[in-house]
Image (cartoon, rainbow, N blue to C red):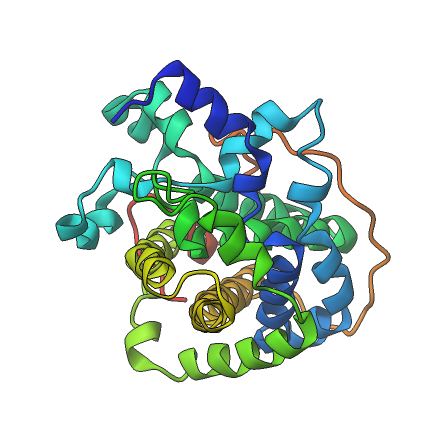
Length: 319
């Protein structure tokens, strides 16, 4: 499903359509995800505010003019370009290996429809490398920016070709759903944490975390795209009134809770992979330099057998 050149240009250049949850929503996801992680708990809790700051870097810093073209499509994965609704349960079968995806679909289609899943894996691996080489500051910085992309794919309009309701008469729904209705960060954060903790007690939810990292990511994409039509239907039925905003916010909280619970489980696995002893060591961080998307040349030394399985394109490893 290729778009014409004009559509491609608009998709890559409309930065407001690539903000995931807006700064407040991303901060909620990162903060809650780290706060409810259990492996490495002392370290994550000591660095909640740094993580809250770092999660906005991909929008706030990395979309600067010098890097925007290379950064833009790392914020979405339009999975409905590959699967019809009746086939969403097949998303887990999407090629995990970037080269395999290029071979199957062509580089142009992959570029247009986004590379967020591989971006998450890239930053996970860079975080692991830094942490196991004793650079806790850089490791934390990579983790912080990684949480941004986990949040992105939990937003239903970030995993759809109909990213702004332009195909269904819902123009403007993207920024409305992810930014306009996300107002009181502290209040929303408390509610999202309750929902995320409930998910971590839900056997059906946890059953989706028995594979490798790409399985985890693709299943989050499936849960996200399955909510896209509800976002659009709510908009049609209730509009952008006070009652409509309340209904959409409830759905947005559910999606942020999913992202936060997913983040917590990924952080748990990352910490177990490092073999580190958690210490409550606050880090003084800075906005990291842009990381060029490179999904083929990543550091692989000091990887435990379990870590290799978790990053594998074929083998499974329980979270």
